[in-house]
Image 1 (cartoon, rainbow, N blue to C red):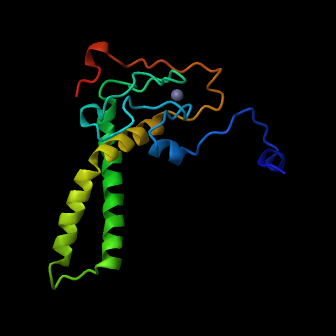
Image 2: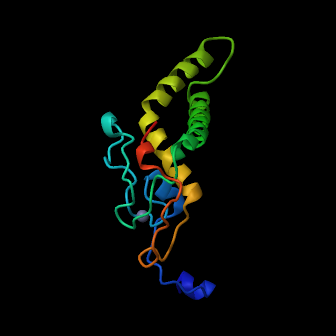
Length: 160
Ligand SMILES: [Zn+2]
């Protein structure tokens, strides 16, 4: 018996990846299929932040208003804190933590290097997360038209 029979919810929606996977993979939040970024490899630094203007699969606009991605500083901060907490726990459990020697200082240095090394990924996922806060999944994206943003300005595109 599948989920539709159990819940009684009828859906014509095809299988789609969970929101968390869609965000981590930087997929369009509306269809969860199209890529947000032009170059798949975030470490091609010249193209790290180069985005499609609209989703190549469903047409969802990625730049909702002027300076939209300034807000991704918040999600970027949250991700950086999560990475730091994770590295702290791993470090404390493996190396150990003490204020009587340099182990805490070493963790700070290692964590700083880690954050810089992960920066291309963090910046992309932060944008993906930020966009997902404002654009929800549409199970009928093939038939519904994507909203056209009203607060954009062609001369201000990618102007940051
Ligand atoms: Zn899409």
